Every structure is written in C-alpha cells, then in structure tokens.
Image 1 (tube, rainbow, N blue to C red):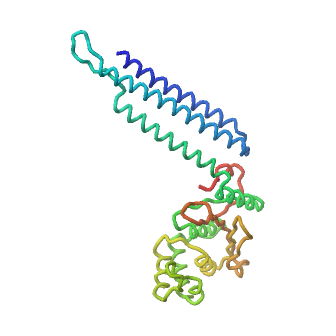
Image 2: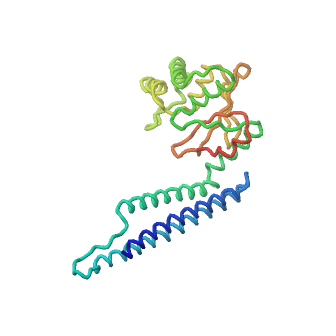
Length: 288
C-alpha cells in the first residue's frame, strides 16, 4: 500500500508544481512593459526554460515510480503466501498525463517558434509595413489566408469607404468576365506553369473559369482587372520597395489601400486590408 500512497502523493505534488509554475508565468508576463520587445523576448525564453525543466523533472519522477512499482509487483507476497499485485497509477491517469505532456510540448514548440520568428523575414516584413502604415495613421486589417485574400481585402476597402460590399463571389465573377472580354490585354502576362509557354485560348478560358469558380489565389493580373471593373485606384503597400499604384487613372473616383506580404504564410504571398490606426489594437496584430 506504500506504493499507492506514493503514487497519489507524486501526482498531487506534480499538480501543485504545475499550478505554482502557472502563477510564476503569469507574474513574468505581467512584468513586461507594453512595447518592450526585448523584455518580452527574455520573458518568453525564461517561460520556455521553466516549463521544459519542470516537464523533464516530472517525467523522470514518473518513470522512477513506474520502475519501483514493477519491482514491487514481482516480489509482493502476503503472509498467506498468495501473490498480491501492487496497485499503481491507473491507465486512465497515464493517458491523461501523456496527453498533458504532449500538449505542453506543443505549446513549448510554438513559443520557441515565436522566438525564432522575432528576427525572421516574416516578422521583419510585418514590422516594416506596420511602421509605414502608422506614419499614415493606418494599421493592418487582417484578412484570412484561404485563397480569397485579394478579393476579401478589396471588398473590405469598399465597405471601409462607405460603399456597399459586393462579396467575394461577385468580385470573382466580375474579374473573370473582365478577363474574358479583354483577352488581348492580359494573355501576354500569363503562361503555363509547366512549360513556360503562353496559355492557349482554351487554357486561358480555363484560367478565367478558375478565377470565377474556385478559391484560386489572385495576383497582379486579377488586381488590374479589379481596378478597371470597380473604376478604383488600388495602392499596394509592401515592405520592400515603393507602393504600387494599380488603376491610377481612377484616382479621382475611388481609392483603396492593400498591404502585400511575401513572408506572412508558409503557403505563399498574401494580401491584407488596412483601417484607421487604433493604439489599443496594435499589440494584438502580429500577422497570424
């Protein structure tokens, strides 16, 4: 029965240690002054170190206990001469402990990745764009990365400037129709991804249909078509190089501003919208 008591005591000890660590982590997080990126980085690294150390220690203690239990099972014999298997940590508890361990490891990996990203191209790009926007009293309006980012960002800009939003599906169909009606203007800028040759008429038609009916990513060709369809001057801000103006002839009629990100997501390039700058929201925008 000593093993049972030891098991319960160890689990209680581990829960207490994790609770105490959470309290310490909250204290560390609160010690970071808003905007102090150096301190935030140091605290994040310290939190990861503390969590990994506790995880390693508790896993070693659990392993040691299991070994002791195994030994007891082999040699526990009551006075009656019958073999009495010693009780140990239940399978359900082990599953819960393993699940908690995997979750903590996952969180530690995420935090480690965040530290790595601080000086990576993604974060450098985000900070550069945010600074450029701030100088114009603007900030990023995040758009989902689902293949529709260009159309969603443009639609958001329409609504921001008081126009009725047209919706992604309608914008896609309008873009597709404009491309079909102005084949000679856009065909020279499109090529077969496999051969590098210009698209055939059939391939161009398929391309236009994909614009209308799928979540295919939109780029410069679709951006130019949208500017004509909406009679809108679209400014595309980017971290490297000057802003690109598309449909500059419509500047006096309607304007929109997008941000272009080369490194925001692993799947490729991305467009976001913008909105008026709000101080209290800036800490939450890191480009997820």
